[in-house]
Length: 347
Ligand SMILES: NC(=O)c1ccc[n+]([C@@H]2O[C@H](COP(=O)([O-])OP(=O)(O)OC[C@H]3O[C@@H](n4cnc5c(N)ncnc54)[C@H](O)[C@@H]3O)[C@@H](O)[C@H]2O)c1
Image (tube, rainbow, N blue to C red):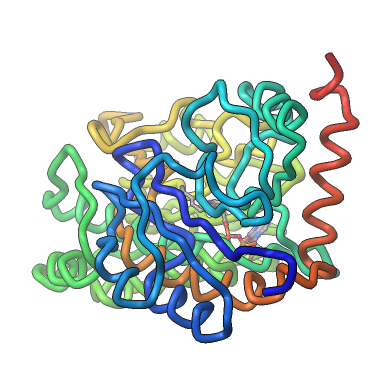
């Protein structure tokens, strides 16, 4: 890795964040390619520090990333802790800072003070603007699984992170005659949702753009479960409205909204207005016939090993070329500089 001392994998600040953007097997691949990897110890990461050490990484105490060599690229998922520390390195993580989000200006100020650069994982896109790496698949998988388990009376709160094996065992444990509809079924989350429903033995209808253009509302309401995995940046007609909820002939009983666009103008399920969480995953929207919603916005964290492994596999080829720059990284860096120049960073 020319002009660089490699990657420095941070520990995540939040105890609920057990995921990582780089798993030990992929750290080993970088190291085999001549790229040094340093890994901070973390009590809650789903992969132990010993696994990284076995992969050839240098293990250092948690929270030491501010002391990383200036040329190192610091890797993480969420904003680095120690909010008062200016950010002087090149950092790779999800910043949630460019679209008017609450903490955005403060985060950009940390970069301005330190002279560092944010390479925001959300803006790692190909030449068509499509994201090259995302957690969608496992979000859809878990979102659909929770809907099935809830319908079968098997969903215990609070939710806890686990493994796919454990989840699949619960999905296979009971059978019923439920019918599910996945909307956005051709996308990452949609395919994940269909996979979980297949494991659960649930008959599934898959809709994407073509099927919702002229929405067959009766068909939608004739399913027991609705899993919404649509990604859209444009407001559009509701898939489910208050009139549908009140219909006595509605079969639909559980909605799992993986998309969770609840605070945006793009919300296609305007029958609820607040996400749910691990402590209370289900909210009753209507009592007779019952309709419940599950709208958890950190679903992949419930399968931290699987979601990290998939994400890391997708990120690895891009990390390998990061020192050369160009392509996805140039576009990513451009977003950062645009955001810095924009109103959010003017102060
Ligand atoms: N809840 C969570 O924890 C969580 C985690 C990751 C992603 N997400 C969200 O899930 C959503 C989907 O993410 P993804 O990675 O699967 O996106 P994606 O782009 O891979 O797939 C989205 C799919 O929606 C389809 N679609 C768009 N408009 C539609 C419409 N009007 N009718 C039917 N289908 C339509 C697209 O054709 C595409 O197939 C995003 O909003 C993302 O932010 C949520």
